[in-house]
Length: 287
Ligand code: OGA
Ligand code: MN
Image (cartoon, rainbow, N blue to C red):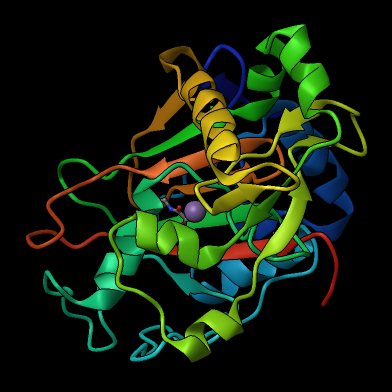
């Protein structure tokens, strides 16, 4: 059956209307990667959510998978799969985290613009987020096409950024997001990583600006100067025209290329409604 595709935004994002991710065969994944290279974000609705196993099996086709993050103190597991990151507001017993719970505070940091796992030296490529329960209001995911952002930067800025790198640190965004300070063990478990600010897709050679709330400093720049440059870039990137706001339905799977986009969760009444979202992540290389 020919692929039916609906554009989600003038510059990026596509909804695939007759695709079942459970039916994609390894031989067809090249075509899917081409789609991702073009659109950077693909939404794929399903009548019922993928099971955890189906979610993992599809993700495996897209590259080496992230397995089990380092332990955060007090974290129990609601979903017993090393490949699945529980992005819900539910604790291990399946009840809503109460205000003030540090695990909820860390999750709320997803409301800052970021790319997934840029705080690892081996970066995330694709994130695959699956909606199991969605709240009746709020809780959209917003995404930005960082290729379009880079393209639109003034030439002088492009030149300036050419050889610049940034230091990405998980704890930086957790603290910025209002989370508590990490313990010494937590800090040691997730050391910072350094990445170029401008990256290039190795198949299409399209350039993209690699920003995230995880960025703590710019290499070789004095702290205030670096912060000023980051503020300027973030203000440029988060202009309305670059943003796609995705409204979820149960069963939707949203796949984004972390090396071409930036994203954030939007608020919802997380003390009232359940939002059960589950993520798998692929990385550049097996580690
Ligand atoms: C993520 C993420 C946003 C959301 O899963 O990486 O940032 O809307 N999610 O849940
Ligand atoms: Mn994220």
